[in-house]
Image 1: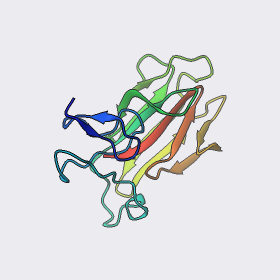
Image 2: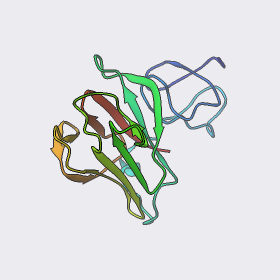
Image 3: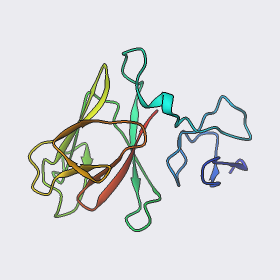
Image 4: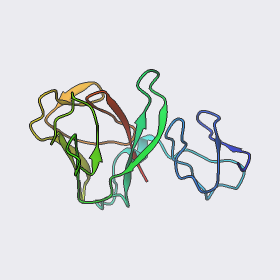
Length: 152
């Protein structure tokens, strides 16, 4: 470890990390080698110039406390499939997850999640959705799995 800490939660981080493994905050390496500044601000929620963000990720949250887990899923491709099917881009092994559960779509305007006919639904910020544009920091729940959506 480099001795640096996340400014949001105080967890130890290294220079190689782009996100805090505990809370999911983006770590800004341009600040200094000792401290980092999170990028979650009101201005960052939308894409101002009409171009899609360079990439995004889903950070898996622990089921009990809602803290960031250790798995991060890159969703920078145009279409990312989520489901219980072994060939899904994000494979979720849970009987409450449909084989083809949801898709995350990237466009010039940002990212959008779409339920593709799942039985138990897709939730964003605890609201069941058919399709919705994602904003930095949104919480997504599919079956027992919870994720935090972050721009990279």
